[in-house]
Length: 258
Image 1 (cartoon, helix red, strand yellow):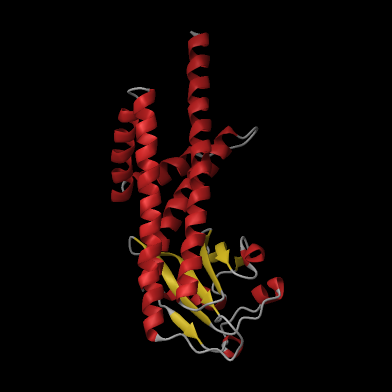
Image 2 (tube, rainbow, N blue to C red; image 1 turned 90 degrees about the vertical axis):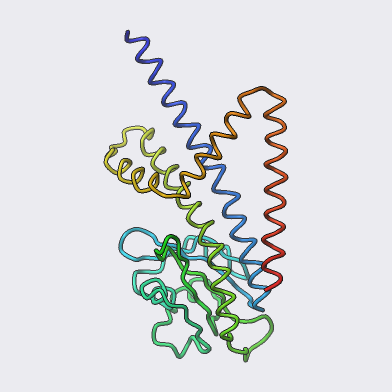
């Protein structure tokens, strides 16, 4: 029986590693999609820079998940402490805000500009919401061209809120895939100690959502088709790739109409 037990364990570990790899594969296109929406919407609002910040831990810290613009590479991964900055205010209050003169605003967090060498003149920030919860902040910084800049208008704030709705769904999907990947890596990590309660609590919350149930229904359909043979797998891949291209083009065209 030991051989059978070892075989079952090896199979479980293999499936876990495959799941981690799938999660890794999923996060890259999600971040690219977020960047593409940032790029298109920033152009629509006449902004130089745009970024997405997400919660980092349970204390209210924010971390730059994605950014486009002059200092995008220096922004990604930067942490803003809880309650700091205009983004911190938007996260805690759940209210959008447009600041015409950032330097004169007491809540402006100057450390990010010091780190990147960029000069923030004005900000439009709006919350990212998913299932009624604020999960991050969407920001647009400055205008194209030279200052003085025209302030962001109420209409532009409304448009930013609509952009935030789409980005929030992608952020939630990214965070779910990343969390599952991190949990898997912790489980298989050499010499690591892991509390299974953490997994159970997350799974209970995640599986209870309507979005997860819908994704599982789709996954079952795809698995059934792909399991019927090579021809079916090839057809399934072609249909899904065509659908992905179509939806990406539709999203871009929708934002350009706003």
